[in-house]
Image (cartoon, rainbow over all chains, first blue to last red; front, top):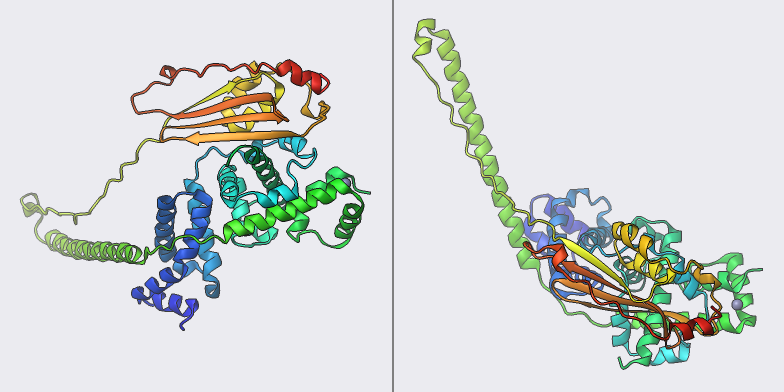
Amino acid sequence: MISDEQIIELVLKKHIDEYQELVRRHQDSVFRLAYRILGRREEAEDVVQDTFVKAYSNLASCRERNKFWPWIRRIALNICLRRAPRECLCEAIDDLHDAICDRESPIEAEVLKQVDISCLRRAVAELPTCYRTIIVLRYEEELAYKEIAKLVGESVDVVRIRLYRAKKMLAQQLAVMNDEVC
Amino acid sequence: MMKCVEIRKMLSAYADGEIKGRTASELQAHVAQCDLCRAEMKTMDVLQSKLREMMSEPVEAVDVSNYVMSQLTSRQATRISMFRWIGVGAAMCFVVLLLVCLFLASSSTERATMRIVQNPPRRHITKVQHDPPPQRKIIVTPIEHHRCVERVAKLHAPRPYYHRHIRRQHVADRRPIQDWKSPETMHLAITSSATADRIEKTISVKLGDINLCQAKVTQVNLQPNEDAASITRPELEVVENRGAAMNQIGG
Ligand SMILES: [Zn+2]
């Protein structure tokens, strides 16, 4: 099978039709990422379209052509974050969470095991976008903190703290949901 | 020796395999003899595997490849036609220049009678109309006046609003939240709902079943001819058992 790298070479040599194969190969991954972050199918689909159109016009600047996916992932992520509602104020999140978080574990591991995935999905959807993004990059994309930091333009410490807080928030939220009927 | 508080903050990163070396062994040693931290570690592990389970759920497939290609070819076409117009323009300029040269070379008395009209090449200008950004009004309704509400609201309301309103109005109790003596677990509960024109969040800090404080944050996207003042403030809701809660936490 022809590699991504070879396809890019061809496209840059004006064999535009070859680009379609590149789109086919990576569109599902881009969609997954966008869908996990934005949560709406139509919007995620728009992101996929915009990503590939934008990637095409910048294709020459993709230096490491054997790493097309990380390159296009960055483009997709930027498009996602530009679309996300600007209600997210991570920098304003202060010691309130920590103060609450430092107390006893809100939910027992045994209880957590029983929690339905649909509850978790709801809890993740309710996280502030910047937290959800990092959760997605960590557990969907399986990236290391360093890579996440590079992608979102923050320090590794910020990534570590946000992941910690995001998980605490999830645990809190799941504890609440567990009491209600989810 | 690291304290439990420090250990807890590292457990998430530890579960992610991001803590190594001496710190990791110190952490392991602590967890081995501290029940609470061990429980927390277990919670983190379970949460982690739940998150992975969620992420591995299948997502529907999409196919935008035809659409993308049609976008690209239509762009290509625009570009070609642009080049064509530039070519036509350049040719016309050349002709005009030639005529001017001929004209200058001819007698100066004829100059007034000859006029060269240069038609510039037509350009296609597509006007992109940007919709004005939606106007927003943020309403923060403190359901319980407490410093904690201030903080909670701060997390969920845009910064300028926070500075203007919340800080000034609702600082009834200035004790930092860390000073509370909590016999039970405090937790943060957020419920949110969104419709096309508004997002509403209720944020509560709970101690067991008791609401310590609660705030409602409503973000209304105004219609073009709507006035921010026309949107009424939601009613204040009073949590009655505040006294009980305060007694319980030693206030
Ligand atoms: Zn401990």
